[in-house]
Length: 502
Image 1 (cartoon, rainbow, N blue to C red):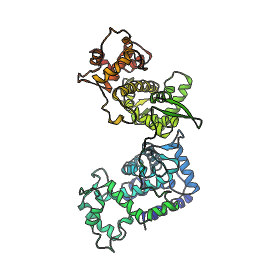
Image 2: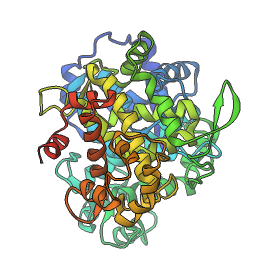
Image 3: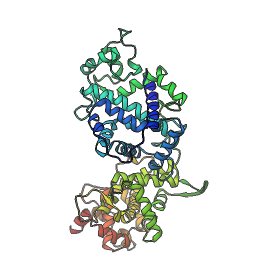
Image 4: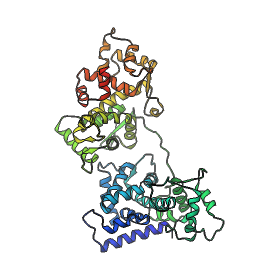
């Protein structure tokens, strides 16, 4: 039987088992599970037990998915990123198998998650983003099981024991030859359609199949090539895809197609949507970003309530700390929720270079220099820093000739010539950013473009980098004791202090 049949049977077994067995209320794993988790085949079974309840096309499966989606999508914007999906899988594995064994199972299959995610996110028509939607979730759960099966088989061949830690995640011809007899004789235990007729067709030797799998002809079969080969064979023989069409596994024929991302909106000209109606007012990317983040930077009771809710979304485990990745995910969710998927994502991407700077300044408030995490008490200042860094970055990008469409192709540096072109705007106070560093330019005798450029070019390389631009503007705010300058001074940024000493 094909993998599709196995998955269907596994779902029925799970339903039958749940009718006779009560789910334990605790999350500690039994000694039996602990001993079995070291077996590669049992790893797969344990992972399937965690995921298959979400693949069932039944009222119970729907209930499971609704509950899971609430944890995956706390903001209710009906989209989930790869990072959020991975975190949910970890939570499910730890809840069912215990923290230690659950994490082990999650780590073992982690290389397969991105493949399932990428296939699932292209199912909806017009899918041009990097998210899985609520309607794609059931299919995504099915793909997680399918890719886990392919990965488990791959790891077993690669190392002989299924442990991924010692392998290089690629199969040599020798490794494939050693495993080939099991696939030929049907004793491999996985029953992939790709290897179903090897015994009846002598022409399909180990060497022939290896050449078919080795798509780039480099003499090694990568995990991506292994998965692609098996998946395409399942699809071509309509075994797995038949299950998709009947609703037992998925719901689309275009699973294997990838939709190209087409940029149809300009971040600098976003039609803001409010209450389901389009507001024709055009807003800059900076305005949109600050309107989204600034409510979390205020010293008011309303802002405090906002921060509490936002923090609970960023820190679902309530460990009191948030990583840079979790902060970036939250920013993305807020922008997408406010400005829709395409516009929100592009604003997030436009300002992404600043997030690490705001994060590092905020966490520098504590005396613990070795901690790379943001705490709840630092969240308000972090929000304030995000808005300020967005202003600095937007001004820098405008001089560098960058926008949302070409930011990745720019060198993120300002030459003296570019600065001379922009200098008159700062001189006449027409730059609209009102940085304190250029307040003295109202006096025409203060300095020349060259003198200011040399002050900003801290490493004397003839170019002002984004980090140097930040440091120059920040120090002016600190020395002038502006509102943001006082906050920045509290952060005690080491780079700024070193410049101040010089």
